[in-house]
Image (cartoon, rainbow, N blue to C red; front, side):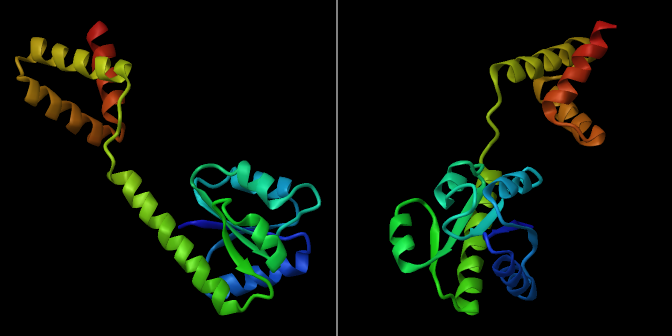
Length: 182
């Protein structure tokens, strides 16, 4: 589930937005009053959405945006004048005063976009480093030499070993290479 961090300098505003979001089925991870608190809360999440105001006691929204990890989105809730400054910052903007349903609908749209990006990342094939490819190749060679396997059989053996041990293909290959040394 995508974590949501609410950041507003006024704690009452943050709690009110959290309450609205929780009643609508969202999981709010933290309510913060400063950018530093938000950055600390980000450490516990791999991905998420920051719902925030324009200015905090220690920084502006754009400073927080610059420090967000790549798998985080930002929704800025601010007045019209401040929103015009935010246009083009890769930030979803909602104008104050906000209607609860507008906030929920906009956040739902961001969540769907995040989930779509996540699925897309999972569908992309993993790119292995040359060192990882070399370890896998070495393990296959050892299996082919010592067990008279074909390359396909050796590869399937490594895949099965990987699944059985709950490790990745590279780690399973490293185990085979280490075991062959003894």
